[in-house]
Image 1 (cartoon, helix red, strand yellow):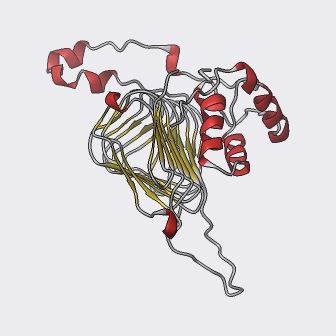
Image 2: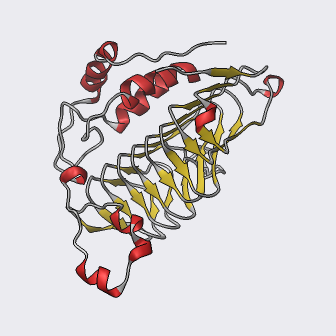
Length: 301
């Protein structure tokens, strides 16, 4: 994988072939003298309309290949945070906020509709009478092939496993297992054992009464997920691993090797009756595999 690199006077870096990326806008709000710098924007391939605001230092944005933002999608990060967006993910418009050293992770082939919000923080502190904070920030994780409907909101601590749908105007604060449909405020499961495809979205320009009546979907098992203890990549494992890494560069290399190079279909598939490997064993197993994956190759300036 051949990657170019660019660096500014505050050690903020961009990795990737910018000629493949249309309408990229990256702002580093604070210089080193004000506590900023050493942020990284990584582009694995082509993308469009990516807008990034780095507030502070040592944050990472990882953009996979063929990532398309159709409208205004702002990624805002404060120091020591990560936003990861996998290959072939599309977002119409919205906002992604990674604050308070927490992360927003989005897998491959996700589809987000209009005015979607993902935020790791309540923005202001809430405290009890003992002066202890009670609303700490939490990271957000979305697996592969997930669909967020228009005006959907994922608040801190939300986890959506592969193949699931969050309905329009829903407010999520909890875990969704694979191949489920959740909706409402508060969010509730409305369907289980379900999956979705992009076929209707692609062909909306040809719908007539006749084509709707005669339409037969091309059913596929590609989006029906199953749990595999060997291939499962736990969101908690990713979170614990990122917490142990101190620099944006080390987080980039971990995500590239352990996540981006992992093409297993069921890597983020989890069901209520699944029995994942214990976290300690999972971390050990996954790190032991890093040496056999394609290494990250960057040409430094």
